[in-house]
Length: 83
Image (tube, rainbow, N blue to C red; front, side, top):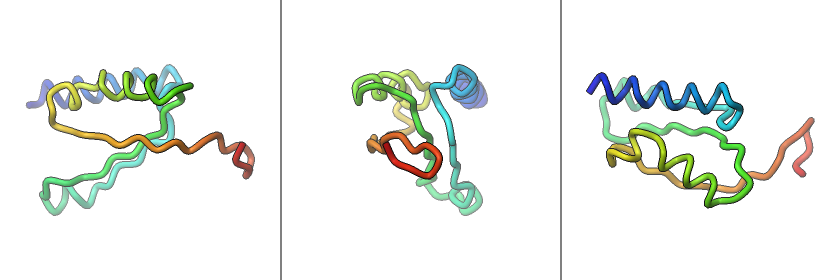
């Protein structure tokens, strides 16, 4: 529904503006081909995997079982170096 899309967008924008989410990437090809798999990747600034899961579980699409996610630890990348 339009309301759910707006709620998801608002939540992502809130997380973005607070610095919790950064570097979001959306695979628009999936929407153009009208398939059921569209990748959306974003980086979460979290201290633990549990904290990252709490953030992902707070998203409206996750709550409504429209989207699933996988968490991959990426570490800190700063000025060309992984720390």
